[in-house]
Image 1 (cartoon, rainbow over the protein chains, first blue to last red):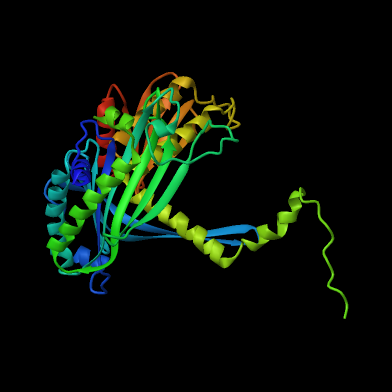
Image 2: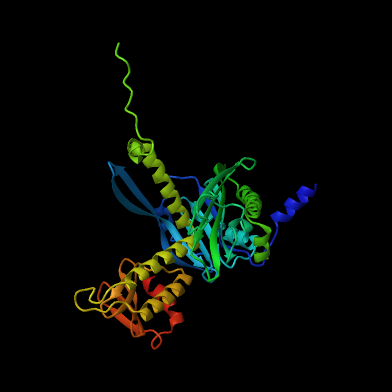
Amino acid sequence: MATQKWMSWLEDRHYDKAPIKEAIIDIQIENSPSLTLANFEKVEISPPQGYTERQKVMIGQLQGRLERGILTATAKQDQMGYAFVGGEGKHIVQFRVNGFTFSRLAPYQTWEQLRDEAKTLWESYRQIVGALPVVRIGLRYVNQLDLPLPMRDFRDFIRLYPEVSADLSQQLAGFFLQVQIPQEDLGAMLILNEAMVPPSSPGVASVVLDIDVFKQGLRLESDDEVWNVLEALRVRKNLIFEGCITNNMRELIS
Amino acid sequence: MPAAQMPPERDPFRLDRFRPAIHRVETPSYNQRAGELRDDWFRRLEQSTFLTIKYGLIDAEGALDRISGMERDWDSYGAEPPGANAIRASKEILQELAGALILPSTIVPSAEGGVSIYFMTGHRTVYVESYNQGSQALVMYDQNGNTEVLEIGRDITRADVSGRILAYLG
């Protein structure tokens, strides 16, 4: 019981100085031959209210081939949809033939504001694509943790870091780490990327903590189900974030 | 029946004993997996506006650092290398534009002594030129030869540059 209360407190914990640089809701729909970019253009897509059209969304394909030590590469780009910017440059929404992505840049407000804005935009997207089923739902939070220098050890602030052998120099100029952890109880997957990046200001070491939890292989026809899945992913994302930081870090961002 | 031939004993500390393994990893499945990881990382970068801007800015500042080390007469026509003032002013303008979600297309030294930061779309081009002596200009032109030049600080404020670039490039 005590554990449940503790977990519940962690799930909803709010930080005044939350290190969230971007929150992303990504919903992919089933591919349909009846939905192409031409359909998007036929309906004369216009920006959602409060948004301006910014750019075409392209998908790039880079194909590399290594043969007998010689690398050759070819690249091509296809347009997949449109991106719009709103919310004084803090909101970016993509309407693509294969799905919808909504981003909120810093400063992050609340989950409720993020979800409600995404819902409104999703309804606009639904009007264009119709009732195609949702096949993948993702929730991604990109955090930047600024660790004060001088720092004794990463483990004073974060609980996921590369373990460097004691026989090697402990001075790290950079690292990039990815873990993929199935979330079996949710039928979801976590892909967590962590990397050192140039510091945001003098006197700190900056680490990006990029948490992406998603469910794929779905076939959801009801939008209510989509938002229920997102609520569950959001709770899990909070637990994952808490699992990656120490009390020292909590103090820094509180 | 002849006895199996044993390989000659090798010095275990000779690094070349690993050579065959290096060839073996160049297999289609190895290349495919490496390609999948690369594509996944690019998709993750592209999906995140924050990371796109963050890494784009790192690349842009890296380009500025590279051209800051050029020597006099780098173009063989007697051009001055970009000076510290021009580099600093260019970094400031890059930071401001990144705040408006604008990344440059390319960064080159200016033959007039300074740095030019280019932003391009299909038919239109904008560049911000930061001169060694401290002034800055915003230059806009299209493929029909229409050109507009604004001096930053006199004809347009620094704060209005990003909005003007976005409006022009569309």
